[in-house]
Image 1 (cartoon, chains in turn blue, orange):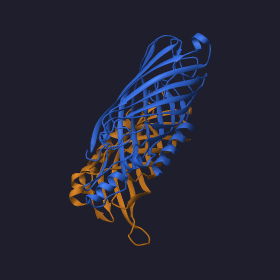
Image 2 (cartoon, one colour):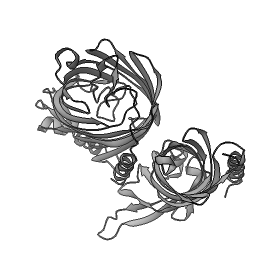
Image 3 (cartoon, rainbow over the protein chains, first blue to last red):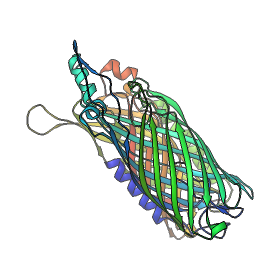
Image 4 (cartoon, chains in turn cyan, brown):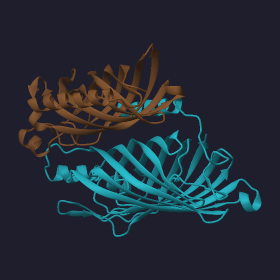
Length: 312
Length: 214
């Protein structure tokens, strides 16, 4: 909690130090060749700008088939279950020069088994943390923008794992823990690319590599990667309506919301947004794909998020 | 104190002074003093938690302008990172507290982005820290920790002109990037669990005197 307060204080100071905007374009929102980008939280834009963002969302999984629970020589059949997710995000990016911006964000994600079976098998997971770093403009043409990013993230995963605790107690593991706490600090560096295909359509892509504390306990450190792409449509040029849409997907090598070795996970979002001169007020339809090695099938979850972003 | 970090401190200090004294644009040198609440964060012993405590930051600083309103700053400093380890007792009563203290020779290399005509600035960069001492409840546990650590730094500062000099006040978020614990040694000695990072805030007051030509 102290860390989060420290990060929040740093965020507040960064906001107080908000520089006067230095922009080449007419409006504060990122624009290239007459196209104003409708970026998503999942695949952030590739422009050095000053903005503040908040988001709040929830998702629920499909019904999950769990394998039977084995206790000693007994096998217990369990019913299906489901999972609930909730997300909260807060971010500020401040322009330092017209070629570099500093950013800091706070995030909170929870995953909760909502029925007896899923509560026992999946428990409760809480992921919280902050990250900060810099966005640097590397190259910009009439229709494209390329930026580099570098940053560091401090994340804490708190997991109430009833199933693991039951297994540890049954196996006589000393100091069996019902609540596990996994801290992870990771650095990241990557590229973001934006292309204004036409006044109405734009494409944003990102590639990022990460290095630091491994999500799994049995490894000290690990490398990771993120790939994302977004296609956005702005109605303003053709219909003079301040409305936009974006479809974005992001694939990451890190496991979704666990500290077990689950392989890649992916998220997809469809954004419908009011896109004013300074503000983007969006409703996001979320899709989450989270692979669980213990299950025959991967977990799909869907939900909605409300997001607001203001450019200065 | 280990001789190696001491020699390194002198070397870095000399480099900072040379960098500051070079007849380049907008160079300054000075001293800084402050407090940090950059304790440790990470794995704890069973039924325990870390509670951050205040530590001392003291050192020198040298900075040089390398572009319009951009300055490169080198700040070799002595930094204390202190926590207490609170362990719950099995009986009712106060938890047992043991002090966990780290002394580092820290060498931050930072870029300052001056704002408002140089009255405020955003600072960011990285720091290399060399461990000079580590104690747990007064016992030397230095061998259980890595001798070198790396940090990321992001901060905000205000500069007050005082004649030719400037008084600076700066608040920084300092995030340890590398694991402080040496892992295998910790397991063998029964020391703290292996995943441990420093993290927290530093509040620093400093003075800067211009040297060389502008």
